[in-house]
Image (tube, rainbow, N blue to C red; front, side):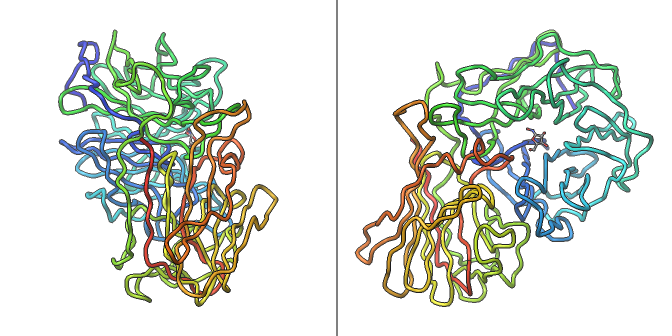
Length: 510
Ligand code: 6LW
């Protein structure tokens, strides 16, 4: 894999770049390079299609080229799959002329699944099941003689045949990470120079998160921990990027080394609320005495400042003129043409209700990740044949929505077990524009200030925007809701059929 000796003192040139490189709920990044092309995948949990696939030529600008799991035969998520179950922690590798993707499907009948393709944009194969590989966070690595090792959280390892899913022997414990640190997980095993390196996350995916590394002369160990562990953590620091961990390494064509990892950007007062989920960050890596040293996540910033600039995300308008939905759109657990189609009314997205509210796991929803701390979403809805709206969703128990139907619009809030109509207004019949604006907290009023506010409203016939309700964003944060996901903004149907002419998403961060 490596044409550079890690003790050779190769120095990456970090240049300047803005983090996160993939903002919004894009956790557990795994990366590989083929020639000049980088590919990266993330977890997708209860969303369908699953495992977003990104492409880049420079590690900084990423374009989503597809979703690896876009057919029910690849991703059979039962309707009762709770939020933050589903697809966890993929590993993406290129080996022997093919791309290999391994994930854990966390649900009844799930387990570790392996997929292959020659084109990461898809289609990907149907899954190969790995019944002999226990646990989460599977990694794939190949020895020089072609032996395939699957390493999982814990950290344990099984030899497998990746073509058939057969495993050979019981899992073999490799390393438990730093004594006293919880949750040794997210292992990735690499042959670099003379050593095998075992990179792991530990400390849990919350504020204690970190990255540690060990090395050995064979892929099966024994492994010697790096004396400088953790090689990356922001725990206990003032750094505006927190929870840093779950990393993967890649070497650039110029010989420099880089790490992709997850982190969060908490806002507001104490304890700090993060609302976009765990995002993908980039860091330069150098080698000292044969150990990786992780550089600054904000190389162009002299000191932590707030808000951080996110990686570039184009303003996004979707007119629903294409027969297939763009890859950024995700639904809950499944998406059937019967309930979600652009073919019924040309140039419109039509949703046919199944569940009657966003509280229900089978609600028909099409959304995209909120990728900016400050942003605006708008959609033109025709609710003549039903009821539906625009929502910001953290999970089925935490969401705000502006809903139209039966000649009225109303703002709804679901916070844990509480559900309420915040405000309602009679409106003239016919299509109307619904909108949500997210404004981050700039000045802390007191230590309890939330991270942001969400204003939900609609456009009057003269084009002015009427805010019907403004709500505290902390209730749509991971610190309140729990789990592994972030906010998703999108359209839903709660009765009959609703049509959406277009959807606009605009990031407003500086
Ligand atoms: C994932 C684990 C983790 O499996 O969170 O941050 C879990 N790390 O490695 C879900 O993303």
